[in-house]
Image (cartoon, rainbow, N blue to C red; front, side, top):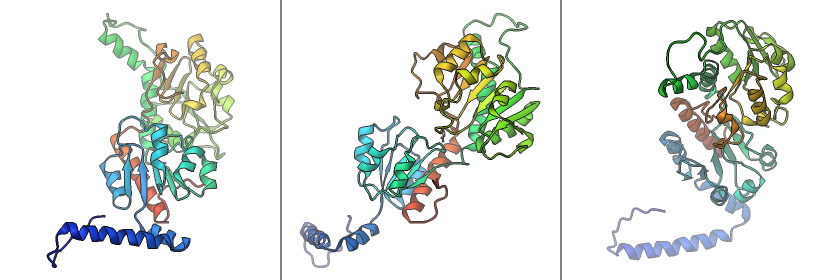
Length: 364
Ligand SMILES: O=C(O)[C@H](O)CO
């Protein structure tokens, strides 16, 4: 607490502060004797507290600070589990990232005053939804704001994989470029191709819109809504999509149903010239099966923005395969998008703490 002290009586400031501190103690003792209801009413009037698990930029931080007492893990690496657990104790809100697993242990340690957990991501497979629901903790997430950036990156990764951009750049820099050669560094073209998008939600559809400019012949998709003919595409069963597509793009959420849906069996159903792109979650792929498929020529190549685990260990077979491009989960990493995600997460928290409608609440 800070006091601006005018001193009309001429007493020295230290003397006044000693009195104030005595008064504060008396107030605390008195409040402690109030009935529980009155105590909780008074504590609700105090500024709420929020724990933030990374540096989230000035705009989102200021927004939170205008309404709450903010504690930040302001480091570039993720907060350790031990630090998360000790810092979340007693907080009213938690601002987290997809790098933190928010489970029973974290929620128990946070305490029953916790009102909202807001994640700076559209994916929420790192949150234990049942435990949050059981505690009536509201959940914020960041759909929509990251859709264009993630779609953009999906196209970039697809082209980098099919047109072998990283390999080509490496050859140019390291003396492999001897002369222009007819079939050197060639890869399959998007022009005239059939593209299958697995999970035709917000991001999948935005990818499809961008594909339009590349002269693809046919768009296939699987989706949950059951709607056909979205954006001129055909809704088909997964097996049909896999066997007919030259490019298979995974943009589906990780759920118990989609876990490792790309496995030995499904890779075998794809064309041998197929390019597999994953910008959703590493967990939708059985990674050992993918390595086998890439080594054996079951499919032509793969571009992965997401892996299991993350970061992918340096000795992973995937890094050794020329027909595989691995990116460090940068789907939404445009400057504007990451800031918008941070601000939306902060707004989710402030609204939930005020008991208002959240801009993006995950309703379960
Ligand atoms: O879930 C998300 O938001 C992405 O994977 C990262 O932006």
